[in-house]
Image 1 (tube, rainbow, N blue to C red):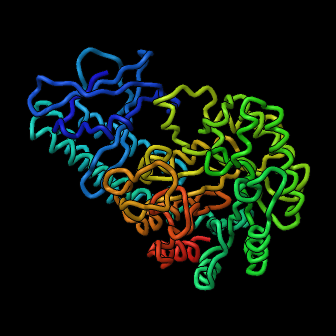
Image 2: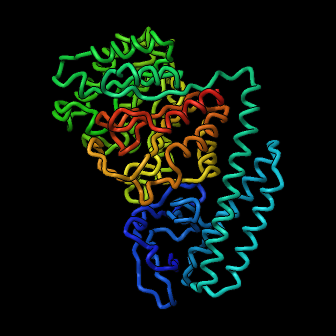
Image 3: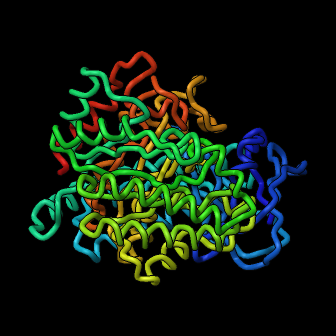
Length: 493
């Protein structure tokens, strides 16, 4: 498939790494994206090579005035020799999604104010101007970008409208528990000032169980930090979410475990021993256990996808048998599955979750890890309506959801971030970390199926995964985003 892009410098190396095609099920296909010379004035050409000829939607990061870099989608496009004009197709796709979402939410009872319909009409007027002008012309490009800007402005207003009305409905529902709001405590005890801010802001805490730190030498375990963190949570009346017991990445697994890289039975035995030790020690103190995390994206220890599913299933089963009164969840990373565009994935994350559910092991819910604005290994920036739509897709599985979040506060270098990722150009999402929280977290908490929201990186002062993603800066000072979360917690629960 070929796409004309104007101006041609929009086709950057970063863009080529992030574009992908997906069919009706929204699951990415493995593709190769390149840029080519183009005979059309003021245009470059984006070439997408793939094995199938089915109709597809193109997803691409696009800089939109007032919104920064946002991942947008075209409508469903058929295979053809003639190139598509990308700005026009993105505008057409966004307006179509916006109109569809209005219809869906209206059918569920949403009262849509008139200014949203005025915004849709303005977007359509700009799209008509783009259609009337030659592809690649200044007029067509400006009109298409106007259509995108206007449609995204309207999308934001629609998202806020949904959040306000859905929050009222949820607050009136007497059969729904209050949504937990929490954060991970990190790899050290909190100082007194940070601890006070944490206890005032959150109703829950995620206590990490970093196997690498607890059992750096095989058979010798140190639980001192975990004991103290759980005791602190109980003292302050916080719901305790512990784990993950097994996080499948190099930063979390002990070095000695690699001795079992080609011995799945011995590896399973080691995992079971650690699981039994952790759960037996804390089963009367933990409310929610995260058994495994990042299992759907793991490429480690030469494990096949089938072996990872088996290992996760055994973890769930063993944890449930030892801690019957706690909720048992599994965390899945990158729910938009962007990583599938560059490598073959045999078990999509929704199938992964479905396999665990069908096994009837006692799984209580799912956690979706969304590190938005990072690449590779993160989630590309999305608008409010697209974000809501993705959560609703996961809700179809019929399980309560926990959402684990991280968003960068800047794109500056971060020496304490140990994952080889970077903030996307423009700092990832166009909004500040504070503004992103103010827009997106209330929408998440308004969903009736969301049981908890956790910020997965508390402080940039400690070693951490994602650059500048903490709620406290490298000097230990709270960022404005902490106050934003406190406000959301006070008004949204």
